[in-house]
Structures are given as C-alpha cells and as structure tokens.
Length: 93
Image 1 (cartoon, rainbow, N blue to C red):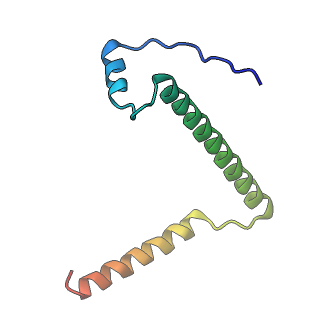
Image 2 (image 1 turned 90 degrees about the vertical axis):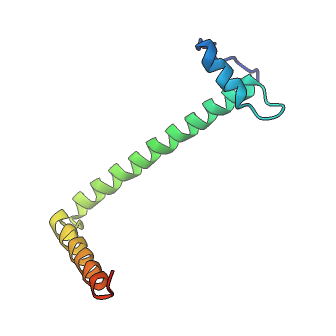
C-alpha cells in the first residue's frame, strides 16, 4: 500500500522548540506527530464505541423496563455514606 502524507501544520516557534525538547532519543518530529495522531484516532474510536455501548444499554434498559429509578440508587448511596460516617465517628475519626 502506498503511503500518504498528513497536511503540514503551522505552530509558533516557541511551541516547536518545546516540542523538539520532549522528543525521545532518536525520535523525529514526524514520528512524534504520527504517534500523536494515531493515539488521538484510537482514543476517539474508543470514545465513540463507549458512547455507542452506553446508548445501547440505556435503550435496552428502557425497552426491558429493568432499570432502577435514580432516587432509589441515590437513597442507597446516601444510606451507605451515612453508615460509613457513623462508623468513622464511632472509631473516633
């Protein structure tokens, strides 16, 4: 497969110096930029998949009616927090 180039980007001279200052031994600016782009592409794909799965889970919960109302969840969490605070107070904390 033939390679392609990414568009050149303009940066302020001080930023370019800062960037060159963090390159690892033997690493080129092009390698750094390619790695940054690959990392960002992977991150965005992961975020999109996470959102897709979350939306699918919400839809399934709504469709099945298997969800727990938020007020019940919050009440349980508040009860756990109150119990932990009481336990801490009884221990002298």
